[in-house]
Every structure is written in C-alpha cells, then in structure tokens.
Picture: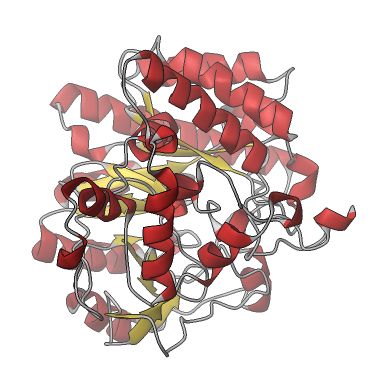
Length: 448
C-alpha cells in the first residue's frame, strides 16, 4: 500500500500537459495547508507515509521540517516525491537529518524534459537544470557517504518528447550518465492517454521498441536498475508482494493501492482512475472491509468490479478474456484504460473499466520475460498447466467479495489446502517489504 500525504494538495509549480492531476488542479488552483489537521492525521497513521503532491516542496520550510520530523519520530525514516526543481542544499540537509528517501520525477536532461512545463521554454530549461543539479548532488552524497537510502529514485514518463527515434540516443546517453554517478533505481511510467497527453503519445510499436532497447541497456549498467523488468519477472513467478500499485488489481472506487491524506487532513484517494477532477472516496457496501491507513478512521470496501468484468469480456471489446497474462496483469492500472470510444475509432476520455491502452506493449514485454524464464528452465505462471484453475479460484473469491492475491492462490493450489483460505471479512496480510528502497507508484512512490 502506498500511503501519501499531500500537504499542498495538487498545487504544483509546473504545468505538465500529460499530468493526470491537471483536471483536479483546474478545479482547485491553490490548496491551503491545514497544518493542525494534517499533523493530527499523520500522527495517527497506521502505515509509513511519504510526502506527495502536487509539489510538496511548495510547503514552507518550517512546516516541511515539522512533517518530516513527525514521520521520522514514528518510523525512523521518511519519504518524499518531488519534481526536484525546488530542492536546495538546505533541503538536502533536511533529507539527511530525517533519513528521507527522495524520489524525483524527471523525463530526461535538457530538452528531453521539456514536457515538464514551467510556463515558458526558458523557465522550463532552468527548472530542468535545477532538477538535474539535485539528482547529481543527492547521488554524490549517497556515493560519498555510502548512504544508499537517500536515493534518488527517478520516475521517468516515456513519450515522444524523450524517447522518439531521433531523441533516444540522447536519452540513452543520459541513462548511462545516471549509472556512472551512482543512481540506483528508475521506474518508467507509461503515459495515460487522456486529457492533453495525446500530443506526447507513442504508438504501441514505438513503446515496445523503446522497452526492448531499455531492457538491453539495463544488462550493461553497473548500479542503475530499471524496476519495470524486475516487476514483470516477479509477476510471472507469482510474486506480487513487491510490485507497484499498477499491478494490484484496483479501481478508482475501491483501490487498496493508495490511501492518503489531503491538505485539509481529510482522506484522499488515488486520482489516476478518475478523470473528472474529483478524488472520489471508495464506496461502502459489500466486499472486503478495511480501515483507511492514515488520518481519521474511514471504513471502505474492496471490490474487483473491473477485474471481474475484464476476465469475461473479449479483447476486441476492451477486455482480457483468454489472455494468459490476466493473472499477473488484471488489466494494469485503471488510469491507463483505453479511451471510451477508441473501439469505435474515436479518441476521447480514458475509461477505467477497460483494459490498459498499453495492452499490446505490455503483452510483448510479458512474452519477452516469459521466453527468458522458460529458457532458464523455469515455468512461469502464464505457462502452468493449471493456469485456468488458478484464474477460476481467484475469480470466485473476488466474486464473493473476498480478497485474494496471486501469491495466496498459488500457495493454496500448490499445497492443496483450499480449506485454509482466510475467513470472510478477514484482511490478508500483505507485507510491504524492508522499507529500505523507494518504489514509485506511477508518479507516486511507495517505500518497499
């Protein structure tokens, strides 16, 4: 679970065309920080949380330190996701003091980052230079002090502005530079095809081409890891515990992947799947009950409406019927659902109930890793003789309002002990790892 605190809401100093928060930002251009309510909320948090936004570094420095101290006092470390343009040496001192794991969102060096718009081209390039300085400085400190936990971890959105055929050589050069200065992790974010993102879009073939090249490059790097490929391999091995939220079978109404606290100290949901500018809270009703992980107690219910529908809907109608990767993918993030009219030849708003618009590319990536595992003598979940039985088991549990992970279904199947399945309304224990590295959630991060 990613637990996020948005002290300035979605307020940001940049105006990226493709940002999924843009509709919400247009409804509320400035979000006032309710210091008392947010502090009360984070002190009652049941899970490790991190600062997110918008841009959290827009918060006054003393208020930023107050929040980081509250997190450090509770968990012994903290986390933040930022575009990096506002980081100063003073901020870095703060990050070191409170053991802050720093995630930076950037799409490349120089012109490759023009997508992260600051108002004018000149202002954008200056902002990019500040982000690049922050990455270099944090990496230098991490390298010289052997402090691997500070990061930075990078979130890079792939689009025509940074990985087109003509720009990819410079992008590759930047990647190798990051490796040389000791950066450890990058997560590649796939563009959500809605709002004003279409001008940056890559075709499925181009995205597949880019990911194949990146996988080849990753095998030559010394320290830098591309987390996407490790995830695909883990999924095909049936290990979903350390994967990103995009693989966690959620929908915008009942996600367990992201729980947060907004600038008013109120519960906040992931906005990737809701494109109308409103951060809807999960509904109550039947299904798996859970308590909001941060701030005031708020009971929600976990459903799998999207996954159940995708499983029985033919691919030509936006579903996943018959796909051998459904167990691992379950349609990917609802925020990347294909456009509601794309099946009829039009391109309009993304529809969260459909499969991902990146389906073809994702399937190609799964096939590549699947082939690798088979060549190593390993049978991936997608090739198991009992794959359909596994799918049926998970489908039936979800249809009954129960929670069920692939890991658990595999343990039940392999141990032939289905009677030990946890009782109705009993929340499964899904560990969050050792909390030593920062792992992104799309444009979010989750310390695992």
